Length: 271
Image (cartoon, rainbow, N blue to C red; front, side, top):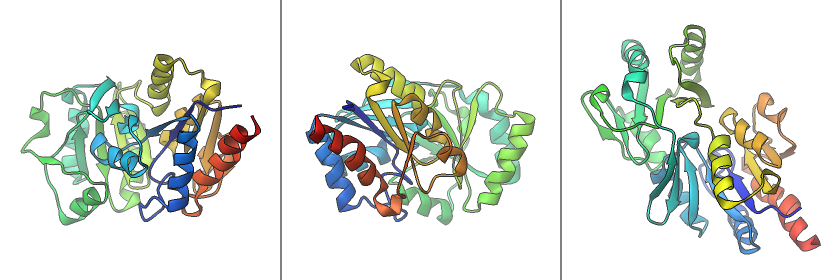
């Protein structure tokens, strides 16, 4: 089987725990691209922090950002598709975060807004190449939003929020996902990496069987399920490992490179 499209998560998958792209992984992804497969990054990051990773690979093209909330074409930063919601839909959650002092930000496709920024959060955003806009009141925003994100350096804080909101369904008609140990995202009910990938494949006339996807966390499950071959990193939680077709090495062991060498480059050479 020749895979026309390779969908790659970024953090915990393509990058190691130091948020670095290793030479082996970079060169392997480049070889796959040169042999005819389209590389699509599918990430919880926004375009400003996702596209530099694509550029580090020496590539340009489509990036699925905000966990499927916005699909962007690079170069040119053209918005291809978005799943948007109104700020009024997250008002109750914003009130909760303010009361319990849980850090949050809200994202339009190309911009991030927040109400406060300590050194802890500033260091986190710097790591992801993000420069957020500081505003007095995010509920006054009138732009369409694609993601509402909570962050804490202490995973236990996110555990508590996840438990509270799962019981109360404070997110209403939106969708809440745990996108990492330190992050919770709330998005449009239809916004998933899988749905964004499905829409992209339809526009490119690519069948799901011709897609290989690699991810490492719960926000990757729909993408892994959609793909003809869904691969989980060894550093994935048990719930992700159980639903994948294959498991590769961890992100600190060039797991993406190993998977592509086995399932894509090997297949191309054989054909």
